[in-house]
Length: 330
Image (tube, rainbow, N blue to C red; front, side, top):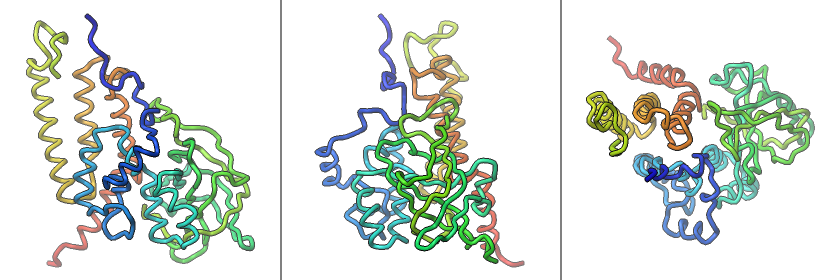
């Protein structure tokens, strides 16, 4: 008798399967239960529950086990960061036009920062130009790795560009512009793949901006195994010493990372996730790199997280700087 397929394998482990697009009735129920927009911390004035970073971290630990949870509960990046930006810096008109439908889950937004051909982990390198022309700012340049660019509900781009290139303070040379997705002059060149995954349908877009006119929105810096049938040499996988060692090491590493996260409520160690996933893939053999398990997709996502929002090395460098300021002067 053939073994049943791995749960979810019928979806090919795409990150945005059709079943996660919930009805208005289900969405209303989530809001009533207080499990909608849970990413908003408790200092925001909103109808969301308003968890602390620690509380949200504990919830995210559980929801992170699902590949569709962020879509289902409306805390999908880059919407979360974009909504926080609008909360902090948007005027009332912008909040009404963009923030309200984002909070309701009616539209999606895209943050455009990274550019081809430059080291975008340092936002000061951004080349896309923002030039004042009357009441409008004209955008020229290119952006890529713009996640959710192909989402059917994408309505808003937040574009980081160079507005004051000659300002003596390099951290005040950039601005963020709100741009409607239907603005003339924006050309989607292609969708980029991640380790071979196209991340359909939302994708990661490569855009060209050619004399795109947009009203100025914001001025701030983006500082932003036990199967009976699976036997090797007469033993189940779980009976082999090396497999048991992998399991033990994975448990130690996961628990250590969990304690770090709970202590800091800031950062999760992506390298530990990669190390654990690598051993899980090794244990499953060929199935581990196929669409029959989620492991390959999970590995690709975990690897990308070491680059998203800045490489690990940049975060560690900033951490070293911060900690050096805390040291005693001897």
